[in-house]
Amino acid sequence: MSLEMEMRYRTIQQRIEAACARSGRDPAAVTLVAVSKTYPREHVDALAQLGCRVFGESRIQEAAQKIPLCTSGLAWHGIGHLQRNKAAVAVELFSRLHSIDSLRLLERVEACAADAGQKIQACLEVNVSGESSKYGFAPEEVPAVLEFLPQLRYVHIDGLMTIAPFVADPEDSRTHFRRLRELRDAWVADSGWPLDELSMGMSNDLEVAIEEGATMIRVGTALFGPRPKPGEAI
Image 1: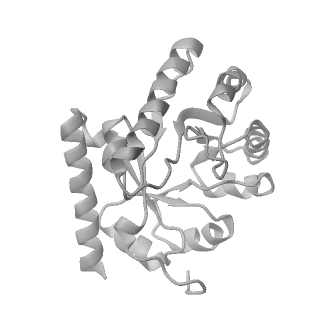
Image 2: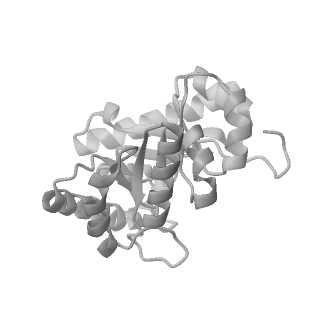
């Protein structure tokens, strides 16, 4: 397992470095978020030993069980759709949320973070593709949300996230990633609010995302291998 995981980890690093070389970027500017949902803690610990320090979980109950068992000193990000009734737990578990997808959720996370005395970084999820099956703000909704951000004291929105449609050819995702970057640049120019982080790209399309400006990529199966079957131990 450890040798296979090391090979996968090195391969992802090579893919990141190659994409950065093509786009004239520093690989250090791209954060690899290892998506560990459904994988046991042994997988997390093995990858942490190889040098990976940032992990992403999307299921609150699973994360609450797993995180205390894993190697200490890791950064944990919440990457999935977050229900408002689980915001309080999410604030305690994660240092960053990638998927703030409504104003009501943002207000709830702010209230929970204030109650906990815990500041948290977050990204606004933007549904660039317009797919009804995906969560996220419609692009036209974002400027009003940016106007609201100065009122926040505990949630620091510093970027945007999107999920491209799953396609056979990763090149077909480029227009969605480029669109988010272009929207970000326009919103920053109009609002003056810095949005330095772009969370976009996964196992199959991370190169295209990096070439279009991703600062965080979310990678699961390409790092960990096939997902465990339901019911296997965390």
